[in-house]
Image 1 (cartoon, rainbow, N blue to C red):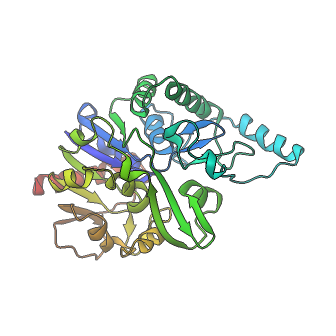
Image 2 (cartoon, rainbow, N blue to C red; image 1 turned 30 degrees about the horizontal axis):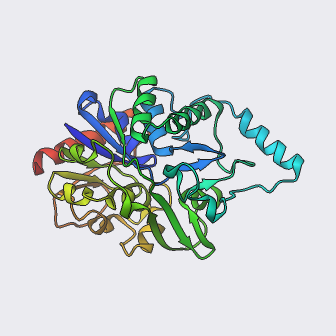
Image 3 (cartoon, helix red, strand yellow; image 1 turned 135 degrees about the vertical axis):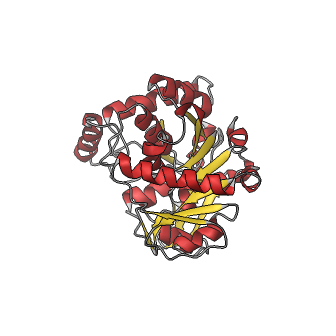
Length: 330
């Protein structure tokens, strides 16, 4: 049995080849939900959805989000209406008093649907409508995710990290903003001062998460701060990881992140913004998998391979190196 911690696009890329090494029936993925938002009344769970679409064979692998070949008529129509009505565009964070008024799971991450600042496809939107409706009927996020996984015939177990609200908020020189606003709308340009995982102190891991973390764990090459960090703030998670075998895959090539603002965010939380900074980000790791050109030095076993993943064969190569690391440190 193996459990992957996943957020963003890094870990899903590894999962493209993980089936060569790890049986899908014995693989669990715990997904970050700190990036989730409510947009126009619909609850959007980007990191969960990437796993659903990947497992269902419909993921757009050019962007690594959304459904391949999806149309965007509703998204376009929203922009047209906003323009014709003279309504403001861009991310519109709902007023503070609206942030905790309504569906509790959406606390601190509510945005207006006027001229959506995130591009959501029409088939993708059907997933959000279904999820939101299930939540409104009283199902938990974990239960709704399982229903959607069944619909997409996903063979691995996907667990959202929590059924409770945890919002990744980035404090910048331009003010505090949700990670999606920071990264999607502002393209990660405002200088980051610190990162907050609001709600994490009162949240609990979703049912099955701590049990999954008793198995061998792989921390994929996701952003250590906003993709993996929210999970580590949940009660019991760091302790569980310190008691099991953990292999962490680097999202860096030396000082450069493969994608996203990982380096800037790590610097903001006082971790060295490169491969060696993973020792601070993941003190519970028993081994690291890094690029074969990386000269990072750790006080724990380190395994090297070409960690660029552009094809399923690349993913399988990285998965085999992960397997080798597990065999050595278990």
